[in-house]
Image 1: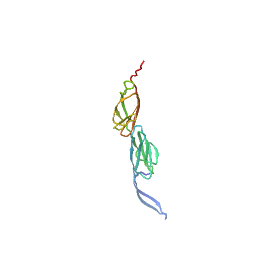
Image 2: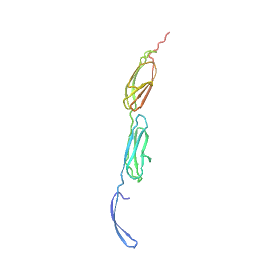
Image 3: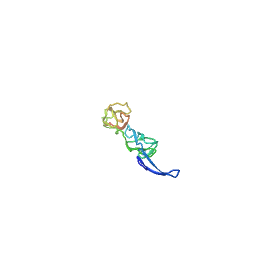
Image 4: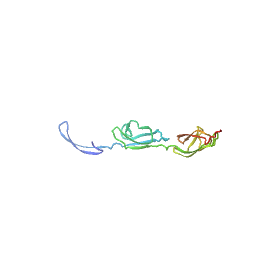
Length: 193
């Protein structure tokens, strides 16, 4: 096995007339084309998804390619259904030349969350309870909220609420949602005797 470079020398051979001849030679072994990878990623839009994607386009090398995603071989330079994390990507050509290994990171936004302050109604049959949303974060702002399947709005204070079950839904700019259910109950119930 000769490495890339220029070679020259002399060799002797016997021709068909049985005469010994000297022959000079020179040749060059070229360095094979390096393999470069053009990598395009698609991150997850919501926390906890597994919709990330990696597309790989090889440049250089020779012939068809095999692709490796965390050492799993495939003939297609595309991997989808990826959760958050790092995937090591490389490719080999038909001459078994290998590209560099590229650690590719798939990301997603932080989990949607908020704090609430809930005030129960003061008495049975009274609708003076309230729910206030504080410190919404995660995902991609701006955020909108819905109470009990009502219309979404940027309103973070819900008032004039009676006792009963409530479902609060938060939605971000990527259309990701966080849902929380809880009850409001009467603070006091008067019983007549």
